Length: 250
Image 1 (tube, rainbow, N blue to C red):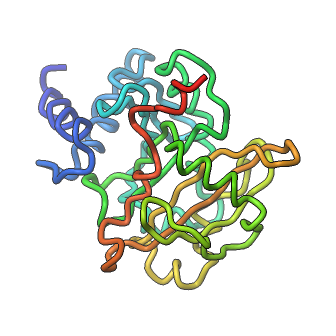
Image 2 (image 1 turned 90 degrees about the vertical axis):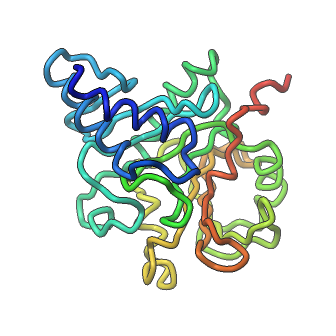
């Protein structure tokens, strides 16, 4: 394993500060490809990842930022949200994989989390440090959760601008009903919006668990464009709370 130490060292730098410029934008890919996948094939253990699903094509890795944050990472080379492969027929639904991988987030939290306290996010090319697609899984910010719940009747089943801001940013949103994402792929749902599809790399996308007023489970999908004056980073990771305050509430 000594020959792979440089990749692991790069990963530590990247995972400790994922929003900052990294010494190598390929460090995360090297950790997953050279370490986690290799170990899984040789020993059946995913180290240093939490899990590797070779058939499903994904790995779950604990991020060093925060006590509970987990990353869902494809095991095939996939640069980011702009990758055309994400929109191809039969493309993996990494968001459903990430929702499944919330079990590793809950394991780090030491408890099962209500679905409305769980958020997943991918940053735009302007707000990421790594050129390997990764979905952040962690607690949602309490104020974000509460704002979405308070305005849930205004969020329909088609993309539309929110009438309120989140972290001072304008988002478009839609809702999905159902406990799982199944075959509903948020990347493809976002790309159906022509403006988003024209520049997918500039988009940031978040999926927040929900329990609607009628008691039915579901999700809120939130998207925004980065690289513009009022949202230069395009990082919906800001909707997550890496201190996980919502789970500390009674």
